[in-house]
Length: 129
Image (cartoon, rainbow, N blue to C red):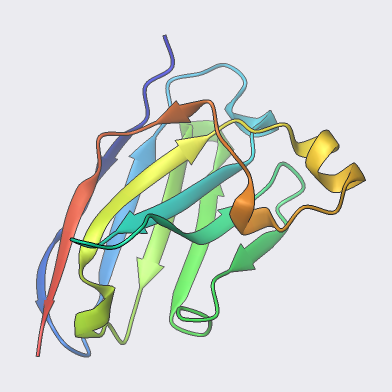
């Protein structure tokens, strides 16, 4: 059973930084598309950043220039470096792995709209003003 496990969340003042990690226990991690999503209370879940098996990255407009997604295939780990954090970044952050990448690319689907087979339990990020 593939179960992503997130860590690294916490509370930080506006302008601060946090680094989220997600370990994905799978022999196929390097072939996966992997992503970070977030959901704030009363709001729909939104895609934050995606990195595919070719290391192509996509970011939501709201985090461009502030967040960086990366992965270490040797350690089956996905990262999200978050800088210049704002109160509106407060949310539960989820790691997701494994999507139908070739299908989505054939149909030119927005990477932030990819659907994933495996989801973590989430890690809370709270940014105070």
